[in-house]
Image 1: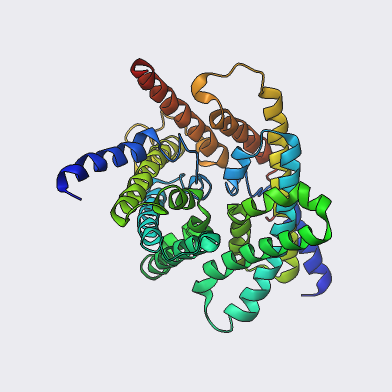
Image 2: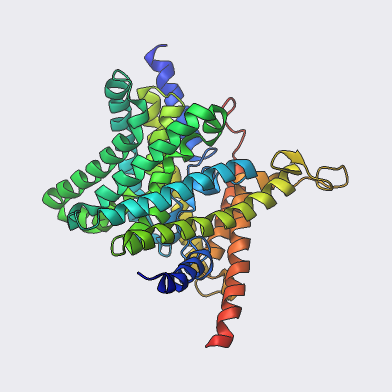
Length: 200
Length: 211
């Protein structure tokens, strides 16, 4: 397969990860921060950008480690531990780097970075990429698309929740209840994208 | 600890985990990895067994090691302990039930980042003796499982007209229009929202007379 078709395929996978196979609304990954940190648009934007960055980078790192270290040593079953260590180490590293080089960015994203280690979307994307046997270029597209999809979903959620803040909601439904219903409606809307990309 | 004092403690732990502080409708933790498999009851059962095993044993292990773990790397140690048990589950499932392993896909591995396990390790196992940590983990996992089984039962029944793969009497007949939306992702969100709503309302009704 030549490089051009692979780039094209990566692009298609990227678009489908954003819309038709949204990591949050279709695969339920990253629900905890989605419900917990979506009260304000501002915090969601910070968290969303942090997720896009970490998700894409760790996907690429994990792909390299998996295919060049784990597969030759036939240690595939060990991938859970390796992936989670790489994610944790990467987040720690980025945190230190940001702290030294760009205090402004650190102040904006810093508090979200530790949260990201336990965000299921990050590990989930890495595991999906292994199961689906993506090539490196496709993996880049997939990681980027998943991150952007998550970002879109949490921002939409935060916007809706800000509007809802002053509405009267039944007591049992307040907080997570109403957030889940909104997520359900959003998922319903996103199923409208199904079929946009044929053969995916 | 004498057997007399253990009995009430068991009861309070059970009540906390199963009802008062239920992981799903009260703490709203760890819904990520398991919501996805609630479209079939059988998948949910397997997932729940895996979760009960992982949560109770990793809670116990964290508790055993609590005095030997340095404070600042304790999250990392906890994650590794959880990952250790998840690998056991994954390998066993792959060896004895490869079909199920394929259906669950990445979600077995995602038990590692299931927030409820980390949450219990941080909230209880870090400070409690082994027995208490184990029971706390066990009851939390059971409280988690029973809600998921309710969701899965409704989704499978309404969405496919079956229960555990067998055709259900009324729901699989021609008189019942299957709710396809129930087996699709939005159905899971709606069901979870409804279940949360119902149980929270019951809970707040029960609390009011006591106050």
